[in-house]
Length: 91
Image 1 (cartoon, helix red, strand yellow):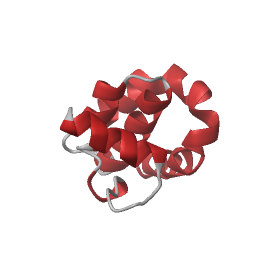
Image 2 (tube, one colour; image 1 turned 90 degrees about the vertical axis):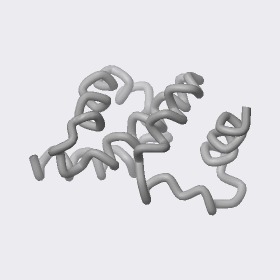
Image 3 (tube, helix red, strand yellow; image 1 turned 120 degrees about the horizontal axis):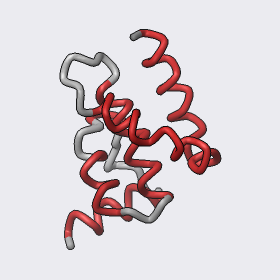
Image 4 (cartoon, one colour; image 1 turned 30 degrees about the vertical axis):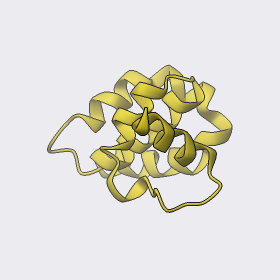
């Protein structure tokens, strides 16, 4: 499992550039984010949220962003992802 967490952390650092490639594995990442005993549940949710964001599936992106814990930092200013998720939540 630690290898999966390591991989998810690496994906999180490049997701904005490589979301199209990651989208091929989106279902597996979503499953990890929904597994309660998986130690990387929050980072998996963050990667899934960012991928859905780039796919313009904003409702799904918000759903996963809300599970991402500290990985989803709403205090970031001028961040397109955060701005979009806040707007989606308000809508």
